[in-house]
Length: 420
Ligand code: 5AD
Ligand code: SF4
Image (cartoon, rainbow, N blue to C red; front, side, top):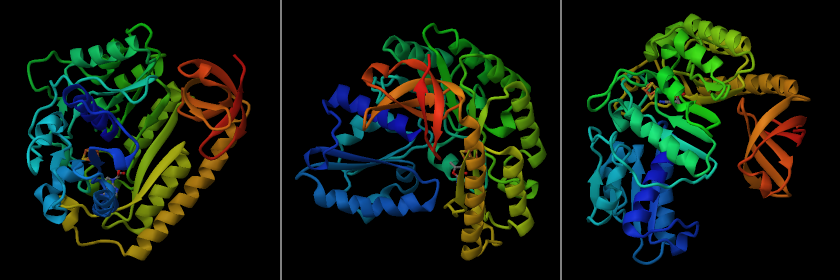
């Protein structure tokens, strides 16, 4: 989400203000930090980074803080770092050129509706296009700050999404990556009049675009994974067979305390249905350990569901209390040493499962879309089931699909040779 928001801001700054992107801090006229506030760590990092940027920046260069931490801290950022020129919330990126010309502007209105905003065009990668399909989130997971920073959920009009995808394809992208907090809740609410349409129908319409070969999305919510969605996912050949299913906990009791809206059984039922219809699907997940009240048995439930599902990738986090969330006031918190030890146990199990699963890739042939030129004459890309694959080759492969036979497996990278 933040990467796409950055592209939106870059597009506006290039078209309206004449800026260009640079990697060189000391020559930059404007430094923007696009922040995340989901967990506490990146928030504290912000202020130390701001200090460094302020010291190293060119005389007269401006500094802007954008994104979720901007939404949630607002004017406090300027109080703590008075050299910051503007603060722009995650829901307000379209106002970038406006705040740029104001003194110490703080624009963090979460009711601001960007769903109809036609941004200028800037894409970091010519090969794939990130496309927002909704903004905000209407859920109230008790640990999560996102509804407070990104506001209520609004779906982007279908016409705009199709037009964005068409435009990207005309410029050579063969893959689109749909973005939203809960993509499979698409159509829940539009800001104006709109036909009734759900995520499965959006996928069907997108896949009619000629020359668009791949559709990816993140994140679907397990609660909204109905049969229609799973059937569309499995039967539509343009939809990549990899899916992120954020579980958060394997314990139904903890899921209830988190207000996730589903049980362990429902999650497992959806995984089974998905795998029965799409046997090669790779499934990744997010798990939080040491949520307030998580007992040893609850934690064991998270470990056992990991063993049962054998996820292809797991992002694991220690629970971090966030301001203005319901769980912030829960008193049954877990001791730090218990939390750390649970995270280590979970991550060790994750490595074990990944090592076991990794071996199954050896000798397989995957269709890879090459996107990046690496050192030592390697070119890399992703398989349909989202494995990161590299082969020896040159830039001629960029933007091309090839069949690759996997000859070597690493934890995060597979190596192979082109066979077709
Ligand atoms: N503490 C720890 N992890 C969190 N996440 C969201 N909020 C918190 C929090 N307060 C994790 C969830 C989510 C991912 C993006 O970040 O697992 O899916
Ligand atoms: Fe946060 Fe829950 Fe919304 Fe995801 S669904 S963004 S975890 S409130």
